Image (cartoon, rainbow, N blue to C red):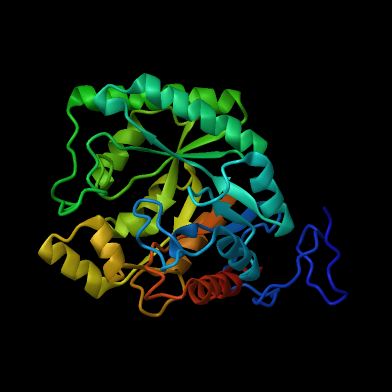
Amino acid sequence: MSITPPANAATSDDNNPVLVSLVTPSSEAILNPTFDRNKVKLGITPTGWSNSDDRTIDLDPPIPFQQILSETALAGFKGSQMSPKYPQDLKELKRELQMRNLTISEPWVGTLFTVGQAQETFEEFDKQVAFMKEMNGNSIVVAELGGAVHQKPGADPLVDRPKFTDQQWSDLTEGLNKLGAIAQKNGMQLVYHPHIGTGVENFEDIDRLMNNTDSNTVKLLLDTGHLYYAGVDPLAVTKKYVNRIKHVHLKNIRQPILDESKKTGRGFLDSIRAGIFTVPGDSAGAINFQPILQELANANYEGWLMVEAEQDPKNAEPLQYALMARTYLRDQIGF
């Protein structure tokens, strides 16, 4: 199947045709130096359209996956995180992606080393490695979900999260080292995602994880929103671990809603419904992304910059926020 674009269609940097993008190109950047456009890819996760942790955070009727992918491309992004809403048949998925000049940036693997489910973890990891080979990608996002409470109704993700014993920490870091070696052998890169409501959430947790894993094979995913939610300065994490950061989720926080969630002990999913997250470029957001992006650019970061805002589409029109974020990134990085 081939599609011939109209004569006035925009073209991407790699000369692959795209039908249209609502974000006009730019050659000027606020960052100095900026990123190498041949080594940095811009994507957006589907969580602004439909939530993977709670599929009821959606419209009624639900937003079809075709709309998510089309609006992702329309906003000028090149990749999307895998979603349970997307076709699970590889042939169909590839066809839908190729039609829109998109790719899958990453899968999500919830590890369970701290609760004695190493074998199940390895089996799932192998499946995702095989999947990413099919997608011609190389990033595998993992997070330890043993005892996690972010999906548990009524649980305060900051207070009720698991606290690992020394043995659990050992099981986790040893398991991650094994996964990292498997990923490297297969031409992949494992990146660990500190996540609200889990046993790796704050700066102390991140330090312990980084200090006890192989720096050559276990890398760090920088998620600005989860860090800020946990009371961690994302810029400080960037500065300390910039050479280990190999994947980035750019997620913003609405401070008044965060303050209310902390005061009331509101659960993670209810905080999403309340509007705790938004995108870079939203004036209602609390995070200053420019110095974070500059630190990454100074270190010649290569890989994905993924916009992520887990929002309720009933209250935040997904395409509007995708365009807001893409325009902000264009102004910051020059492409």
